[in-house]
Image (cartoon, rainbow, N blue to C red; front, side, top):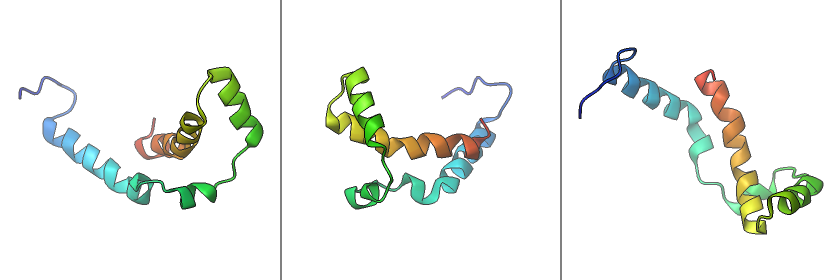
Length: 79
């Protein structure tokens, strides 16, 4: 595969991705129901999201599970 990026070498990119993944630690572990149930969830927000986005309860819960990842990710990468 040809590397066509001039601002970063393939090796630097690979090292950056590896370091970012290592920083995630347990954040990348699967999110089981027991762990999800420990979170404080706003029931009004869930009902609002379900109504506005016309999503199933499964989709709403799945979205709530991934919110911590989206919040945590920028603080690791600096974006």
